[in-house]
Length: 97
Image (cartoon, rainbow, N blue to C red; front, side, top):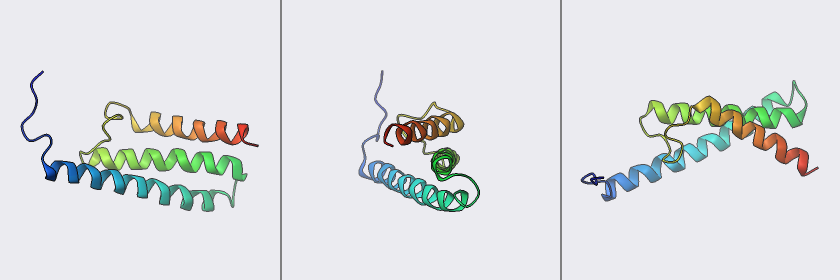
């Protein structure tokens, strides 16, 4: 397998770090905001799981739209990743009660 030229240039690494940090911040802010909004209408336990799932889905969709998907989730559909994240939060909240 041939290595691409310029795969490890400082500009490419900085761009990956920038999109990683931006994606993490977007996911966190969306999760907190959606949890606060959804907790008004549904039980808090389900609101958190749903908020995390929707925020992960939205972030991965936006990163794909910007042509910078996360390295390990490059071939994963955003809805599948969001569902797994929400399910993981739901299970963790059940176990930590």
